[in-house]
Image 1 (cartoon, rainbow, N blue to C red):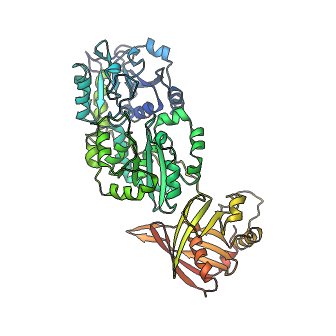
Image 2 (image 1 turned 90 degrees about the horizontal axis):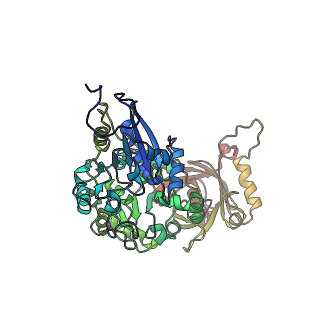
Image 3 (image 1 turned 180 degrees about the vertical axis):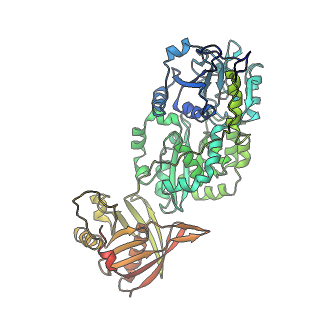
Length: 566
């Protein structure tokens, strides 16, 4: 008589008391990327006290040290490899067939660790065979290594059968993609993610770079910095999603050092677990090489721009190859506006449909098949993908700008760029004193944002009026000092026009409210005052900052603004 909840005559014994119903699941990882993929799967066991989960690190990967760190960050209980190979497990979960996976005893379930099988890695396994479908890794003495292949699309099953023994394809099931399901349920959080990133009304351009010699960052290392230099700061935000292997092989320290100019100009560099996905949801367009991240972007409906410079890795009839063939090309950073316009006219869903099916069903289907391997009846409660958390990486806020300003009557258009831009500019503007002595000596506009109240028992504070007077005294090259009190309220001291209170209206459109950066508005007012310093107040100006226009009202300084504790 079988024990309650037990299905007899199925694989998996592990180390448990006979009939106890307890099962041990081993998660076998070779890299941080594979671990992240499997963490999206493990909710199938949530709430089931019969299941214990342990992790082991398959030796031999170039990226195993970062995988170990990722396991530690996840709070995972680990099993030493030597012990793992001595134990029979009830289920082994893996997202890569490489390494010594076949040495682990127990039924093995294998998932892809990306969207589809799009690349063949030169010098690794069989030539011209998709990484992840290679019989060099999937077969052992002609027999399949995995008892279950959990794939995202019927096309993947056909390709699995094409490259492997006839016994392999019957072990494949189509379940969809658990990571895509998380992206889809995260879509309603798009505005929240953008708020966390400080994107506002700007266009968020996400660069997606895979790892290896044909990746975007390897081929075009200057592209992130070039885009940050060429694109107006108030119109665009730029982010860079890197493959986890790139984080592992280079390290956050050296990545940040190499990308320092772009990071200083506001580039967003998300962490490789979950945060990358939040950036993808928040994106307005994705510039990509041949890595599969862009297929997720296409499935979300985001415009895709091709920045892959060719090579030997991309397989010609893969979903990623079809996506790139349909996407507009980006020859150089300066061509982004034209490429973006072309990408907006393209429907990316078609190419993505060849990589994903059964949307929203991955976890329920995986639960059914994994519990079959475990020999247990699955829990009957609801199971659904969860949204990704909001990003917590805060991009650097640039401390200085080269400002282009065009004054036409009472309307001013402002564009801000990094100081080393090649564009002709009207003036330099900088934060005082945070931007440093060289910038503050050169800037015509110096600003400071009001800080949060101090919690110290003994404290002193400048008033906005006192601080602006101090700045003009200490920085003789400065023409305008601006105390940013709130996002709608500033006190400006101009050498000729004197003290002026600014009130900035937000931009209203389709039920949403957007705010311009007060520092950009201050630069617009400075440009107007350079022609109209003797103009009688009050006056109302229209400031174009990036995609929005805001009305700003200039009046003689308000006493509350002058005395505002700064």
